[in-house]
Length: 101
Image 1: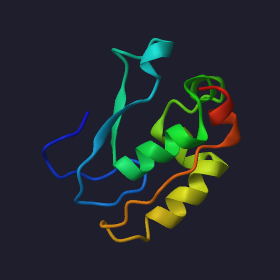
Image 2: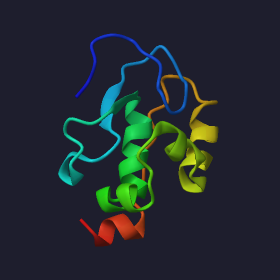
Image 3: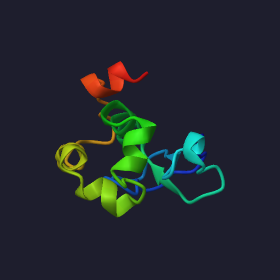
Image 4: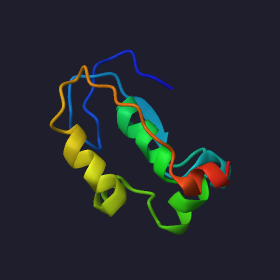
């Protein structure tokens, strides 16, 4: 789900850019009515490239702070935060994610 307004990404801090709604607890894991975070599409794609929905819950990556602190995501956030808003990187799914989809 995209916003029509220009916002700041809750993960990488870049702004102003369009954000998407990320369910901090995946909907399929009971998070439909739970908290969400407005994040840019680059960060959103990276989350789902690195982690399965089960990973997000099992690793307790269900808050913005937890995602920012996770080493795999932190490396990406450090890099993307320095990029111009026009950068929309391609992401590669991790082998773990490829096996579980």
